[in-house]
Structures are given as structure tokens and as C-alpha cells.
Length: 88
Image 1 (cartoon, rainbow, N blue to C red):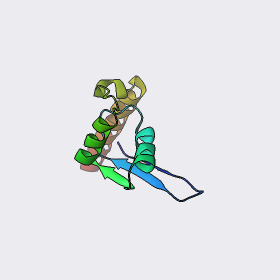
Image 2 (image 1 turned 135 degrees about the vertical axis):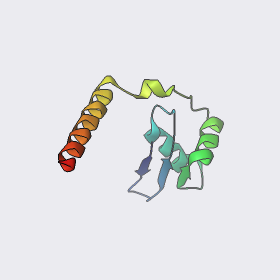
Image 3 (image 1 turned 45 degrees about the horizontal axis):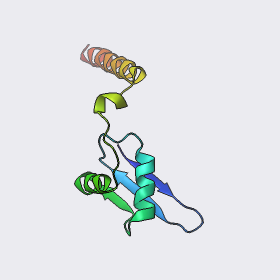
Image 4 (image 1 turned 120 degrees about the horizontal axis):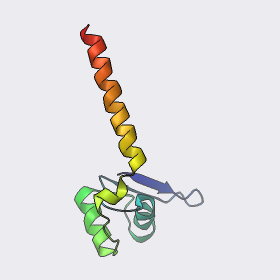
């Protein structure tokens, strides 16, 4: 997941990318903005910072909703239908 946040009053910013197993990446981006001299952390650096800040990990399955699964299946079905149309 990716997230970013900016404070319009002082133009400070925080962002994270390639983050896994974090329930709220926006709150994580806020920590980057407020607690580090950096404005962007990604992948392993972000994971190390999350651990240092005590951000609990959430199992990936908890981050996927039934609604998202249905939407993904619908997209796959529509994409397969488009492939068949193109092959005709």
C-alpha cells in the first residue's frame, strides 16, 4: 500500500510506499512526517521504521474485504470476456 499526507500550514509531508500488513497507512505516513527528518519511506526502510515505532502488523487477509474480492472476480471475468472478443 502507499499513502501520503501533507500539512498545508507548514508544508511538511510524509509518505510511505510498498507497505504491507499495516492497518492504517495514512497514520503511518503521519508518523513519517512528524517523527523523522524524511518525507518518504518505502519497502524495507518503511518496515524498519514501523517496527521501531511499535506499529502492529496486521495479517494480510484482514486487509482484504469480501467486497474487494467480489470486485476483483468481476474484473477478471470482464477481462476474460474482452480477450475472447478480441480473438474473434
